[in-house]
Image (cartoon, rainbow, N blue to C red; front, side, top):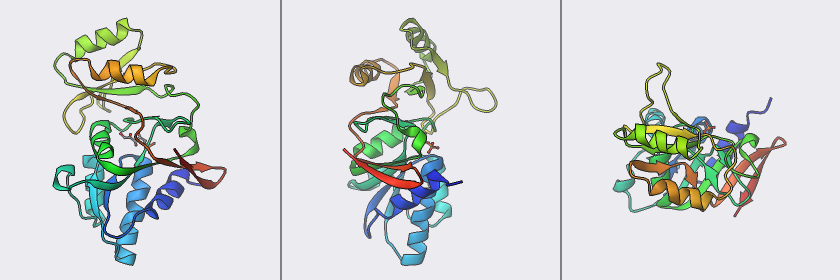
Length: 224
Ligand SMILES: O=C(CO)[C@H](O)[C@H](O)COP(=O)(O)O
């Protein structure tokens, strides 16, 4: 069976050129991109600076010999390649299934170009089947949960394998909203970002420039 995540991850590494500052995404698809990039560095002598979107990716990149910097150590990012949980025909998406949405959004927002890499299951006609992650300050999270329940957003506090609240790299909680279809993503984004205690949310609107999608055994490039 075709490994779609590997296929798009490897294809994405071809978009990187010598001298670029590259945002390194997080997740099981981005894993293959980081590995393919590391291969180009060791085999072709490609010189790049990596900006990891999570501690997990930083560990992977370091183990594989990629030079790394934080987003504040560079003037800007040329290209960020990251996974997505869902994307729609306008290339708006939901991210944060892996919990790295905050730094992913900061790095993407400071990138000249953003490419998402996706297996075929990530393409949707309308966002919202995938639970929408909202990163929140721990203090007051109980009240945000109550607010989201009142709004009918069916919130759940994300937990780790031990059943304890999941902590992001920045030591916040994540509340996942089970919306079953988002009709006005822009309005929801505005509502969420203005709630006190919300640090960031997983709606990535007007951020991606291209998606490399695995479809019918091939890589399809979708441009905005
Ligand atoms: O947003 C993310 C992490 O915060 C990931 O990019 C997203 O969850 C997709 O992950 P995967 O490639 O493992 O399906």
